[in-house]
Length: 297
Picture 1: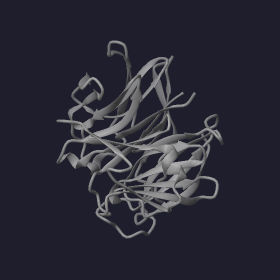
Picture 2: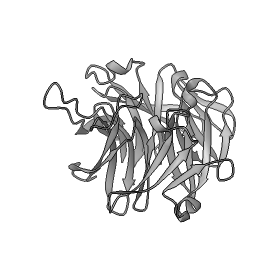
Picture 3: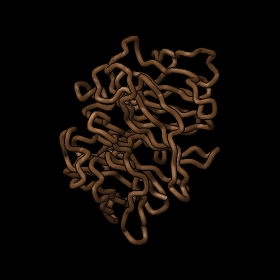
């Protein structure tokens, strides 16, 4: 199952029919002064409970810290019926991007305060907070988190002012630390700089490498080989792989204020990962901006 999060909802891809269906809508405010959700961003699969987890940007009363959204709601959705409910509210998370699930723990990017929350999904409490540096502002623009083979990969976008980076942490070490706050430093993290690559999203383990999106340049980049594997002229964000091929989320360049417009369509493209040839394009009608792609087996 191929799922795509967007500004206006969660979409399911029908690979055979080459079509998509919006299966979970963005929650809109009831009144003018209630803005409602600002779109779905990170998406993960909670295997222990067979639930899809969606991260929605919200304003729930936390004071603003330089970002439009101040909090997040995590929705838990049944992958058979696509009925869902708000599982937990996380306050003081500014402009959430990606999330990753491992066991009963959810890793949530807090882009605005340069940290990652580790949430216990059963108790609905904060297990730990992984802090990147001492400053609680948007220093590195942390917008990607992926867990694979005892590694936590964290995307440091660096706001386009410096080359992007990938920080790699040991999952078992983070889990075993008896601390509520863990400060990332050169002693407990490996940081790789991606020369000349900026405005990145996503970190996807692929074969023996890592794949990232250089969103503003419309590129998908192989870190190990040090080369662009997909090049286009639209905003790219959200990548995933399944037996059909390699999926890439694509959006029209748009200002933040226009990303929720129902007359803006997104799309996902399917590529052959052996030669990176385009196989098909699936439209996401009324999606606004495409934010993430998830494969659920």
